[in-house]
Length: 403
Image (cartoon, rainbow, N blue to C red; front, side, top):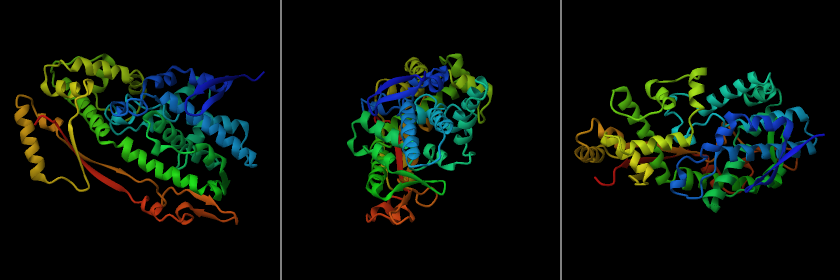
């Protein structure tokens, strides 16, 4: 008898899990680790409700994949039960390679290695351990399967990954501008020439999706205080690594020591094993210890996060003038004069960029009532949609408030 498990999700309601196929994946210790990886990094220092995890998101995205494939099957799109299950497994594991605080430390532990690289390596490990149960899921994940539209449901501008995180993140932050109607978008999905399309009557839902994504990036994901704390976190790990490699006093557990003493730019079994041992909890424990480190730069950085003492942050449309930067660096060096290269860790500049909709490289297609298929921006009467396909770049400057 086929058995289901039920999860009560605050965003999607009751989610059914086919127990024999999906539960072994969810119960895999590496997947359970996602319960201790925050979905939105340090955003809860700005939005107190944003304590949801990658585990929540993975389950939600899997649910939307099940709904999407069911809708397509009802529209006579050829998707076998095996293909449906494989697509569900692929999206369930798509974020398993995230490290502590998710995107906040994307390249801090393993340089030049993306979370997608790590996700793929972990999926391959699970596949070996279970005798090939992810063979088809891996082909879909890598976009090597003949039905390319299944990969588009995992990775595209209108994939179930984005549909879940926009709904979920707006729910937990309370930012209502980010809310979308994922269920309506899914009901409007179809396939034309192996490409995912949205039926014409779903145009306004797609518009709302794109505009909501823009709001979420600039109001939540790139909120200046969230951005500031995440950059400070990066610098804290960077300073800790410098101290360790220069023989300075530093508390560090062996799981973190591995990344402090090595520069890792490829995924291999050893680095993978140490990586999956680290979660947000481990980093928080180290941050608390580092607040009392004798190095004034490390203790200042760690204390700023642990006790929520924000740095100053300025956002501009153009890069900051060099004399202004030099003035701030000079003041910072005076404040931390006894520390080596203090300003190099405490005065930060950079850019953030976002494109709400890429109509050139990864377009969304609309199936018109007359049978034609058009790129989305050609079907809407709102001219600002085309403007949203332009990349927006903003410059930031972060420095200690007390200078």
